[in-house]
Structure formats: structure tokens, C-alpha cells
Length: 267
Image (cartoon, rainbow, N blue to C red; front, side, top):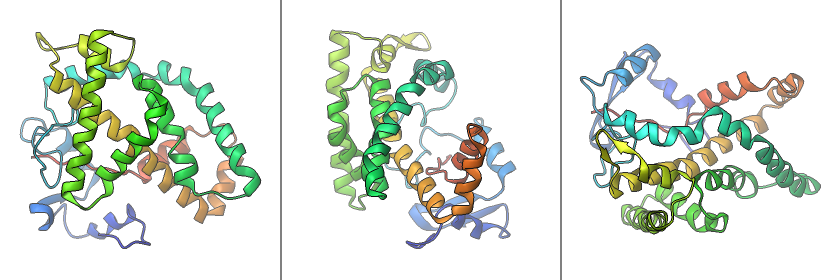
């Protein structure tokens, strides 16, 4: 879809003008909606379209990542178990520590006047915050980051599978620890939560943790990389953002929209 030096997200614009649905023969064949209103309608249509077996293109089988690869009414139960940990008051309470860590990382880089952004900043800031939210040891960061990176980017299907097996094994150990000694973290909350009239089973806890881990260890890092590259290439935009001072919320929202990293399919 896009060459190495192209704007990956902008490449989607190539579909504009070719109709509201474009068919791709790639990855087993699938349709791509090109209009925002259609995308909204399709994403909300849980009567005719399913995420249960349609989240990944191509379908990979194996573990369904929850809550992403689930349909109502279970979807709401899976989300309800984890959303309190990402509620605005909880995230707001983390802001001082996030800012402190960001300043610490930047001050270490500043004397050199340059850095390799992913390795020296993006691979540290969101992942440390994520591990704290998950209640996982900060020292596990290099190991988990390598697994997530290999799973997300290695073209070798066998290598991807091995990385996923390692992630699963890691999560299974943490689930066993929380069963023996519950805490106030996400894993303990899921072990105490219910889907309908029954408790989460271990596979559901594991699937939810793997989904959160891949999001926290890869997606946020990739998004920050896209944003940093955009700002590095656009000094006028950097200057405009500086002038806004503390009024950054609309800018952050637009950058999140502009540099989306993943898509979810429907079946």
C-alpha cells in the first residue's frame, strides 16, 4: 500500500474516488470501506457483522484477543472488567509521574541535541506507565518489548507464533501468581469479574491481558513514532503547537486521529 518513505496513513487516500467499498485480493481477500460514515455504520452493526472471527486480516486462528475480538453481550462484560483502570480520574492521577518521567528522559537526551526516538524515548515512557497500570514488574520491560516487537513486525509466521507462545507463558505465570495472592491490579480484577452469570475463565483473562500487552507495548510506541516523525518534518507545525502552550488537548486528539496504527476487520 505504501513505500518505505511514504506516509502510511495518507496511503489510504488512494482508495478515494474508487467507490464506497474497494475489494483487495490480498491476505485472503477482503473489502475496505472508504467513507467515514460507512465505517461508523459498519463498526456499529453487530447484527450482521462479527468481531469474534473477523478481527484479524488474514484470520490467524488461535487465541481471540479480548475484548476486541468479541461480540455483544459478552463484549460489554469484558470491557467492564478493565475500563475502570483507564478511566479519566485514574489516568489523571498518573499525569504527574508521566510528566516527571518524560522530563527525566528528555534531560538525558538534551545535551546531545539528538536521539534515536523510538529506542531512547518511545520505548521507555508509555511502556513503564503501562506496566505500572498492569501491576507488572518494570524490570520485565526489555523482555516483553522484544516479544511484542517480534510479534508485530517479524514477517516470519513461525517466529511470530513463538513470540506469542512466550507472551502467553508469561501471562499464565502472572495469572497463577494473582490467583494465589490477589492485588489491586487489572489481572486480579479480571479474576474476580464475571461474564454473564459466571466468572472469567483463565483463557479469557489471558486473552484480555495479551490484548492489553500488545496495545501497551507496541501500538502506543508506534503512534508516538509517527507523531515524532511528522513534527520533525514540519517545523511550522512545531512552532504552532508551542504557541498553544497548555491548550494541547485538541492537538493530541487530532494527532491520534491522523496517525492511527491499527484497523479491526469484521466478518
